[in-house]
Each structure stands twice: as structure tokens, then as C-alpha cells.
Image 1 (cartoon, rainbow, N blue to C red):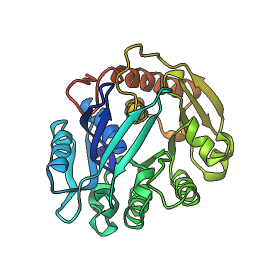
Image 2: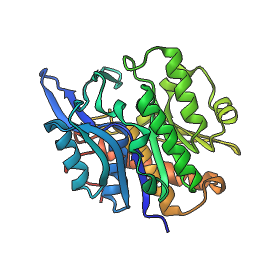
Image 3: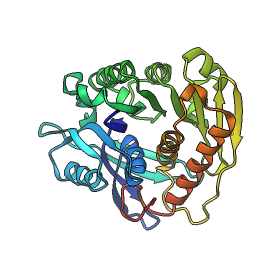
Image 4: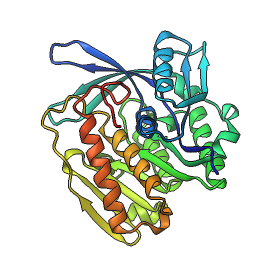
Length: 302
């Protein structure tokens, strides 16, 4: 029996969300940290792997994960780096615009030598995201973690997203994101990021070997593409949405949670199974947009 249901790897940071009056509301965040909080809040056995500064921002974010019973024993506190900060502005179309205080950013300095090998060999699912691939050290660590987890039988989950301003070039971003997709069984991606990659979902699936591509369209629902076909699940409109920038993370966290609850091997998932998973993911993501930050007590999933 595996020790963990889901392990997430990557950035743990502080989001500062711009308000209408020009002020900012701080919340612990980071895509994989947001994601892992969903199954953790629902009682699954979870862990987080990453690096933060030994500063007040990092300690606040770390304490938040620990409050939700996420195993943080593999989080490295490094006095030589600062915890990454992200300033978030939600534009009129509902898209999040990020500015990162990341020079270089604590998560980029995680090395493969710091990986918890025994932990990676004992998880059902290993999840990572594109932000871990922007710098050589964390990229090497991420792909080594994927290799170890997969060799031990884990399902690999990947958040494929392009964030402007954190890559050396768009060409490098495309190269590394496509490699992440190639290494994954389950991929979560938005319509905008598909457009950035310049490839159709079906071509992406067949050229890069994933089992399923989940195309998250927010309140407009979700498309899924698998080797046996594709489908669509209707979204849920949240009239009083306050915080939409974590929707994709919550969506994927809920999808992985329901996938584990069903207990069906990924290669055997049918269209009804996928629709069950994605209905639950849409509902959970919609519920959490009415509060600021999935990493808060306000967003209770139980």
C-alpha cells in the first residue's frame, strides 16, 4: 500500500490579489500548493515537495499547508533565497495577470539532490506544474521526480500553463511545457495555453503520449480528449465570484480526488467515468471562487 495518495511538487508562495480600491489581499498560494489543498481538505494522504525562504512569507505559507494536514517534511527552508511573491490582477475578461517577485525565486533553486526518494516511491499520484520548469535546477529536479515516481507505479499529473515574464523565451517555454505533457498521464490545460502551444488537443494527445488532456474553460466547462474520443462537460457559473485565479488548480485537485475515489485505472476510464470526475471538479472549483484563496479556512470543502 502506498503511503500517499497525492504528492505535489513546485512553488509555494504568497499571492497578493489586487482589489477594486487598489489595495492587495495576501494569500498563500502557488499552483501545486493550491491543488494539493483540495484532497488534503477532504482527508486524503498528501505531501508537498518544494523550497521556500526561511522568511516570514515562507513560514506563513508552510504553516497554512500544515494546518490542512499536508506532509511538509520534504519542504526545504533555505536562508539564502527569498520566498516568491506574486502580484495578481484579474482583468475584465476574468484572466489573471501575474507579476512575480522572483529573483531567482526559492522554488527555482530546488535541486534533484534534495528530492525525498522514499516519498516519491510511495505515492499513487505525482503532480507538477510548468513553473517548476523555468530554471535548470528545479527543472532537473522535477523531471527526476517524475522518473522516480513513474518507475514506482505512480500516475503523473501535469499543469501545462504559460506565464509571461518567467521564461527566457517563448520557444524555451514551449519546449519544456511539451516535455512535461509528454511525461504525464493526465494533463490540465486552458484554451489560452493550447493556443500558445499552437497544437490541437488530439494532436497533442497522440504526439506526446498522455492518456487524457483536460481542457479547462472555467465557468464555460471542460473538454476532455482521450485515445477513445472526446467530450464536453458543462460548467457552473458563479455569480458572486471573488477569486478566479486559482480555479484551474482547484479544478485539477478535485479531478484527482474523484479519480482516486473511483479507483479505476487511468487506462480504463470510460466517458461516463470522466464526466463524473469533471462534473465534480467543476462544482468544486465553482464553490471556491466565492472566497479568497483555496489555502484559507473560508473555503471549506467538507
